[in-house]
Image 1 (cartoon, one colour):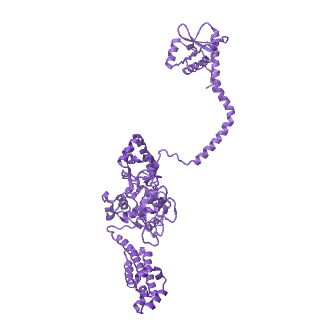
Image 2 (spheres, chains in turn purple, orange):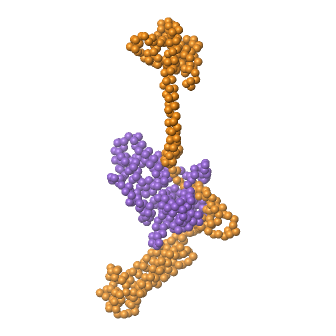
Image 3 (cartoon, helix red, strand yellow):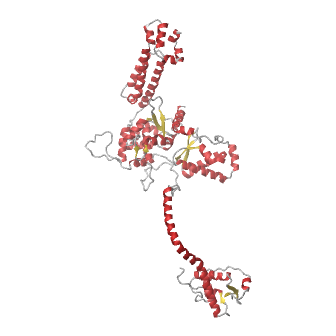
Length: 269
Length: 344
């Protein structure tokens, strides 16, 4: 129960805007509920197969474009903006989209919020073993990912929760000061507490009963799905010239069987 | 009433405001209602109450302000705070103080929980400061060789420009991010304003020039396209007439007339121009006795030419046919001399 509470709490700072956003759950008509199988059958009779395929392609494109910013896709938006008349055959369309994503792109569509029906795209394929070649051969990777990686590593090594002051202090040692504009990252504080949180890489949660108000950082649901703890530990081992196993707790967590850490029911905290 | 005020904690709970107005009421009630036992004096003495409350608040503040300090496993400050609280609690009589005590407990417990989670560090501990130092090296920090390498805050040296790129590249293999969708040849949304301006300027420049040249050039163009054909047609008519006049009785074979054995393209052009003659009624085609097509100019005196029923036909020729015809008719030379390089 605490888990759900934490989830909804963490979503409040970033989603409070959305709650007042008139588009939230406003379909003009009723909010979207999953049609029953008989409704779907009837719906399918209305449209030709190629029409349904076309709609599925549109949904797919919508998701892909939304994924560019890594902001989760809302089912309500999908229905309102893309599906429109096809809402009754949504389950069929959804099935085709998932299949195409899987077989054509190698992506997985993950539901990170079962209540509000938010989806993210992650790669099904494991990244290659070696680091990619530097440009011009390889595509340039965003330095923001480096920053995120540092933050996620610290949180993980600190067993899943850290106070924000620890993160800021660590970043300062790396010449990244949240109080100053950084040459590469700009407004660091906004990047970390707003953008990364909205992308679901991080959670920025208020610590109860603190005066003045303090926040702590945890891994977000996207990080849980995308990031390999084992590989972070490997990197730590390289940096500190230690075996990853020396951090026994983190090692155990990193190599736990997959069931232990689901995006919406993480037991790690 | 006084009894209830003094001893009844319940009433004071409801009338929280009464209790807040310290001093007077309580002291009155004190004098009136009770005998002066020292214990009870203390209980209701506003100064004592205030003292206790302020001590509690101090304790709460100290826990909040010195959080980092208290978290450190090297001291027992938290325990000391709790012991202080215990002592204070013995003197607690009114719910307000009890509420403060409860608040202190909440704060202390939170801290205790954090301390406890720290306890679980079996195996190697993780020091973020050391991590930062190692990471800086990884990023390629050039530590300048100064005399004072003792600087702890790592302000020595400078980071190369690709420092964070190095980290990002190393980090990539830990992420299973879906690669983002983008058009291979770039999107259409490349910034519109700057290119538009450039295009406008360029267009303006060329427009002006074009306008200037246009009067002279246009005439030439028009001449060359429209009038060229007419000229050609007329020229061919000239040839036809001259050949006809040379020998009016001999029919001029159409193919002999149009074919240029040296150039297939000119042959086609000749056919094209000859067709204009036919269309305009300036020449006529007929089949001779051998059923071969012949061409002859139309005599202008014959008024009937305009009213003669016109027939249409489409002629075509291919290179193969052209060669066959050359052989068949033994055409050595062209009857229509090609123009000089005027039109080329």
